[in-house]
Structure formats: structure tokens, C-alpha cells
Image 1 (cartoon, rainbow, N blue to C red):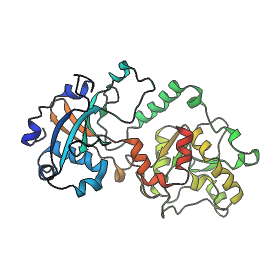
Image 2 (image 1 turned 60 degrees about the horizontal axis):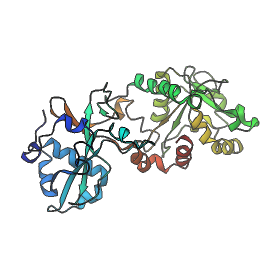
Image 3 (image 1 turned 180 degrees about the vertical axis):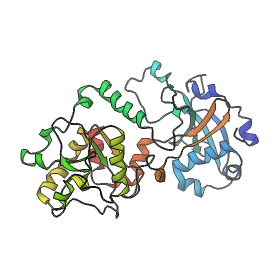
Image 4 (image 1 turned 120 degrees about the vertical axis):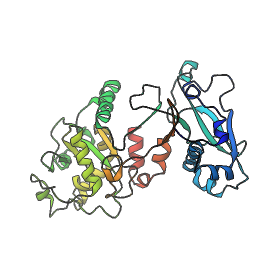
Length: 344
């Protein structure tokens, strides 16, 4: 079990504090649960697991303010709902009661709540509403496949359609819409009504393998792409196989980069290309083509900040996905905003 400093031990946190609604009991919402000085927090984080979680949540919320905080400055923790990512259209009291609770840091005695909170992290099979869950170092592809099927089931024709909507491209360029056949490891035209995966990633300075006029024919031969590919590209091919899908679209290889007329048309249709994919892999944590996909290869596994305070009470700092997507290297790509508009 985790070690706590005296102040954190006196909080007496229980599992029920986090599984209950932040509206219960009355007055809990936005109430201060804990406070201290930044000096004590800096000293205690090395030996107190909860102080370390508080520090991590503050650092992820605003690392600059935290680094410059005076030792005598005050921080507070306030109760609120366990996620900022999900905001239902129906703000009825019944819906609000479905949310559980989390502790959010504030810079100052009366400061506003920051984005990253400390909340319950349950086992992988947790059924709690938007509850945090433990994740393995590597992605569970069965879970990803279940998300795809759930999307098709819940969203109807919008997500259940197969293949590229040919109305997105001029007829003269339909035979230029290439994908990678991951079974034959080569470029090919996408068969009619076939599902495909798309990759959205940052090229950086390491995206050395491009389809050009002089190598296109070779890349279209079986095993033509059995060459040294950038790590992110190779990972996307392997993920496609793991999902039991056959085709993946990756712009560097599926667009002939020196055919400028067709390239311009395909670039203008990239929002449709991503939207029509059965799933788009977004390499949001990478800063170049050789970074790999986080959670896929052993070199780019996932880390999760959580501690077990007592039996059944595991707390952690969960990602705030909207903010992380907006502030990552991937968000600097020219087409990211287009993707977001089309897919939101």
C-alpha cells in the first residue's frame, strides 16, 4: 500500500468519496478537501504517494506556474465531477447524478479548478460510468476492436458504411486512391466497399520513405514495401493486421508525392479520407515518423500515474484528452483542424 504523509493520512479518503456523485452530500461540489503550501508539497512528494499525485496533476495542468510557485504559496484541492471530457446534451439532474467525484488542484486559496484531477482508477473490466481503469503497458487490441463494433452498432449508417465515399474525389482520380495491402505488403487500389484504416501522424525529419514516380511500380508489387519503414508507419501496418483488417491509408506512401496534380486533389479531400476510414490511428504522442505508436511497441509503451491507497482504493491522474490533443505536436499539422471538424 502507498505511504502517506500525516496531512494526507488525516484526510481519511474512502472509495465511496469517489464513487458517489459530487453533488452528494450537499455542499461537496467545489468544496476544499485539502490544502497546503508548495514548499511542503515539494518536500513531501518523494515520500507521500498522494502528494506525488497532487504534484503530477498540477504539473500537467500548468507546469510553468508550478515551477515558479513560491514555497509559502497556497494550493487547494476541490471536489468536482470525475471528467471534463464528457458533457451530455441533457443536463438533467438524473444525468448529473451519474457522474462520480474527483479532486482537482487549484493554484492559490481561491483559485479556479485546473484541468487534471485525481480520481478512482478501477480494474480493467470496470463498468463504472466514465470511471478510470488500469491499462496495460501495451494496448489491448480486443478492446479497440470492440470500440469499432460498438461505434457501428450505436451510430448506424454514419459509422457502419464501408470504403471511401467516391463522391469525395473527382472520377479521374479514383484509381489514384491507393492503400497499403498489409497481407501482400504493397500498394494497391482500394477494392470497392472495403474498409480501411487511416494513419494521422507527424512526419518530422525522419519520414524518409515516400512514394515517387521512380518507385511506385516497385511498391505495387507483392512485398514491395518489405523495406525499412519509419517506426510509426510500420506500427500502423501491424495494428491494422491486429484488428483483422487488410488495408491502411498512409499519406506518405499512398499519395505519389511528385504527382502534384493528383496530390493536390487528394490533399483537399483528406477530411473525407479520414472520415470514411473505419478507424483513424492518431499518433498524438509522437513528434516524428520514427517515434512509433504509443502503447504498441515495447519502445513506446504507455505509462499511468496511479497509487493504491488502501484495499479497493486506487487513485490516479487521468488524461484530459481534449486538451492533450490540442497541445500536442500532432496539432501543428496542417490538416489536423480539418480532421477535427469533419470527425467531431
